[in-house]
Length: 124
Image (tube, rainbow, N blue to C red; front, top):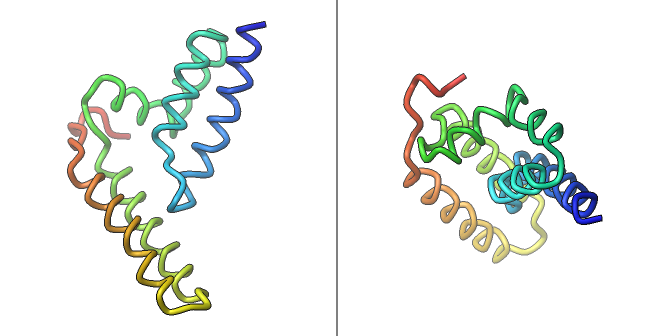
C-alpha cells in the first residue's frame, strides 16, 4: 500500500515537474526531485526509467550529485521563464500586475544564476 502511494505521489510530482519546465511560476526541480525520491522507494523500475530519461535523467543526476545545473538547462529555463512572463504581462489586465510578475522572474533568475553550473562532461 505504501509503495502504491509513493508511486502515485511520484507520478503526480513528475507531471507537475514537467509542467514546471514550461510554466514560469511552477518550479520544476523540486517536483522532479520528489518524483525521483518517491520512485526510489516505491518502484525500482519507475526510478530507473526516470533516471534513464533522455531529458530529465542527466539533469537529475547532475543535481543530485551536487555537480550543478547544466548550462543548457539554465539557458532554456531563463529563456522560457522570461518569454512566458512577457506574454503574461502583455495580457495582464492591470498595469500593477506587470510589476508583480517581475518578482518571481527576478527571484528565479537570481536562483538559477547562483547555482553551480555542471561541468561540460555532464552536459548532453
